[in-house]
Amino acid sequence: MACEFVQLDVTLPKYLIRHFNETIFFALFQLINPILILVAAFILPFTTLLERVPALLLMVLGTLLQASSPFWNVVTGMGKLAVPFFLTQFSLGESLSQPLLNEMAMKMAPRGQEAFYASSVTAPKLAARLLGLGMSGGLLSQFCPNASECAIPAIAPLMIWVVTGAVAFITPTGLLLLWWRKWIR
Image 1 (cartoon, rainbow, N blue to C red):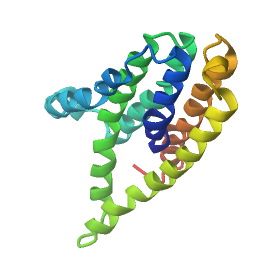
Image 2 (cartoon, helix red, strand yellow; image 1 turned 30 degrees about the horizontal axis):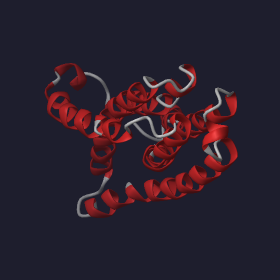
Image 3 (cartoon, helix red, strand yellow; image 1 turned 180 degrees about the vertical axis):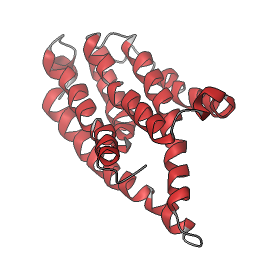
Image 4 (cartoon, rainbow, N blue to C red; image 1 turned 90 degrees about the horizontal axis):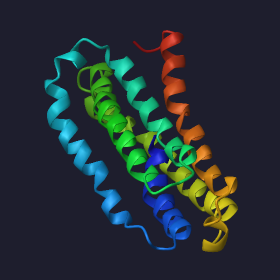
């Protein structure tokens, strides 16, 4: 999922400028994520429905929501409504999965090694962010190299979001595989 965060921060603004020729206010869209995370941080802990659902299932659901969110851009042909839907779905998935990831790390940690386990959760995020930075430049240069080629309603610019979504599906698939093999519970 960290790779998708990089795509939101680095790829999406550049893509929108090239696609819409600077007629879109991306800064307003960037407010969607923090606002929804703050709202969810206050609402989700008090929801009794979530207490009955296993944490791993909520993590899988959250990562599935995040991973499938770039496909709003593909389904709508990158219309202007795609970005708010993309960011809203991504934020809701993040609000489900991220707190549980930290909680599960703390529950797995032996007494006295909580700090090591908490920091080990961030190591894969760092690797994914580095992958995302490389992907961002490669995807933009391949599928949206300039405004004239990116503004054309074609399949090629949308491939950025297909690839981003496909890479993001590694996380929920991995969680389901680990659960199926009974390596995590």
